[in-house]
Image 1 (cartoon, rainbow, N blue to C red):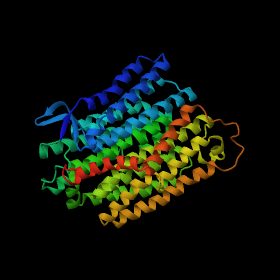
Image 2: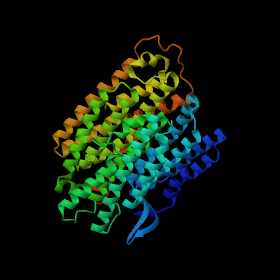
Image 3: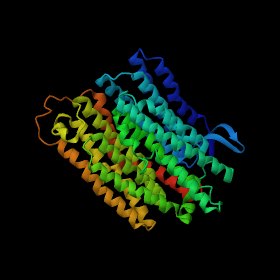
Image 4: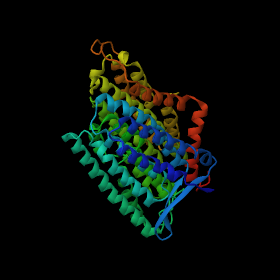
Length: 494
């Protein structure tokens, strides 16, 4: 059942409106930060108010306009879109508070531009999450690329500007191919609306299906950092740490994998993926990315770059899950969309807090900091252990479902990739924890302050524990993932 409501539009617009208020509050930092946090709280409340309808199996729609005949631009909130929006908006609250502490601690310049762009990026992210059709999705997808460019280049150093140009070239070229795929799809079907189970099964030209599919995957795969489209992401680590957290956990790369979940589940559908072998082809790319990025993470001495390659690997867990064309694996992929965001934001917040207090960027320089910054390193440890897939942490739940999905679909290679990657996660994350808690007098003068730098990672880490060990919390999250997967594999009948 569809419920017509303006709430999705209001949730989308609230941060856009806040960006204007932020811009005009540039000379009053306290007011600017008030608008930032207030918008985050209101946006999250609006998104969460949709939960009773989504939990009951309904969708919430709001029409924006019509460009192509019989294909209107509209917002449509289902279980998959709600999951992404809820994660992005809730984590925006933490990131807003953290950004205030980070920017003030380092006395960063151009803070108004930073918070302005940050608010716009969250507005675009919700547009992506709530898009009911390919055209609406594309418009917000490209807006996200443009409004995050000032964040990547925030420091205005030569390195930052070079990284921003690389990011923009990758993103906009991918956008061109994505638009081509959308126009071709409309020409072939006369339809652009996301349809549970897909709407391309009637196409008989296998060559055309193959080309359209990989245009879509390239278009979304750049933001999802699939190999070999990933090079922009490690370069973008030159940005301030809250931006890195935004890129990795809340907006950009999550928008890429969310797009692939939409394409595989709501444009092509599991039957087309199986019949054409496209699922196997996408699975091979994702599997190569998982293992390749994990090995590259092992070689990184810079903390943020190691976390960046970890993100590249973990994102492809989701993509591989969608490629398996298994309902269990798709459920695991949706779960990992949120779980990875919580774990990775805890890790990046911790890395940023360490940099603010010590200016240390290399892993070998962190020796002894675990005793001087116990809350920060506790949050990092929980994120690292969770990302490695230990029981009682949220990462275990989603990784277990992905492994079960690989077994259900008889993909032994996918199972081997997931298990091998779990071991590699331990090898590149736990040494950081061990080094941090090694005895050293080097950082004896370091203090863990202000609270805005250590409370957000602790809250994110607490969420990792809650969604991995509290039955009620697990059921809320898994219930949404089950609804999303059921709609795809049962043709809209959860």
